[in-house]
Image (cartoon, rainbow, N blue to C red):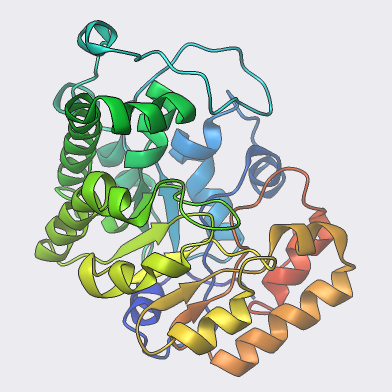
Length: 338
């Protein structure tokens, strides 16, 4: 039986209410799975971020109540050698001169109507959840380089502040523009903050340079009546209270078993914030389809999806075994197949 999308289910999950049926959440589906689901051929490596003509039918067929995407081509491009991994030490802004020379994009000039076009393709009951071209800290690290940024915060605090403002202010405006569209039901502020052992910057520096812009993003979305999800990898133990009580995110995504298994995260935070996904990508890749199904079914049965939606700890990359992806979805959507 076909599973019809109904965005009200993910809204109930984000309000920590019981949805009408088991509900799924994923940050995004990579091209490989989307191509299998739709029979379409990806046009670029980044179709999973912007090609709504593939994203929408793929996520609908897989049983999601929404589709995730970038709203436009706005971002903070850095020319570097492309590959599966990218050095965090590389950057293009080193000093005042290189900061002034960097061609920052204007989000007001990048909106080519992608959301308006996507809205026309949305099936009844489905909405868009917009995510950004990475977040405040990720983009600053990309522009400056991690090591250089650490030195800059110590040696040239004012320049560091200006770079964070140049990035953070533009991201706030990006989301503000997205929220003008009725088809946008929620937003994801996606910004990796941590290593396995803690945050990339000290908690004081996170509070000073990073959190103020996320606070603004959440506030403007709430004023528009939309919930906000934080997607952030790493060990955020020391800042969880601020994520919940200060920035006031509605949901938190990205979990790893070696940091905090999602089952434990749910028990600790279920009364304060919605826990999304969390089935460790490594577990989904390495386990049998039976093991994946049993773990996923157990957390669906335990939570009843009150303040929880089923999905991975990060996303669906092309290297996840297809049968294991299916096994995860069947824990919430027994008839799923492709």
